[in-house]
Length: 120
Ligand SMILES: [Zn+2]
Ligand SMILES: [Zn+2]
Image (cartoon, rainbow, N blue to C red):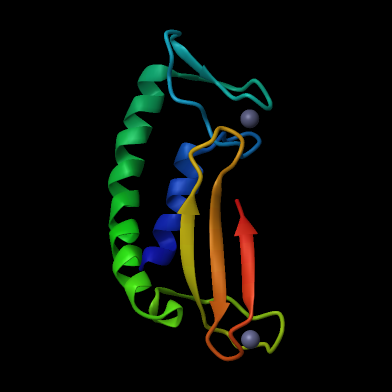
């Protein structure tokens, strides 16, 4: 369920060309990607931003509740553990608001508890 919304947010808030997180609109009519210079008109960007923040708020609330318990009780992803080959891992996401970093996903294997970190 919430597995889908991760890629959703990633697609919408990040530069479609290089994947860098996009800065907030300033006084210009365009938001420019710091890395590759890709330009998106502010109007277009605003629409995208509203949609993505609605999608994003729900999993974040769920995670906050899950984190009060055990790490392993968080949402599950169909991800294969590189250590033991188990195919279910729980995950937690952290959204970094700095312009240079995107969303970070922390995976924990339900079988051997090994952790993997993925940057998008
Ligand atoms: Zn870019
Ligand atoms: Zn494992």
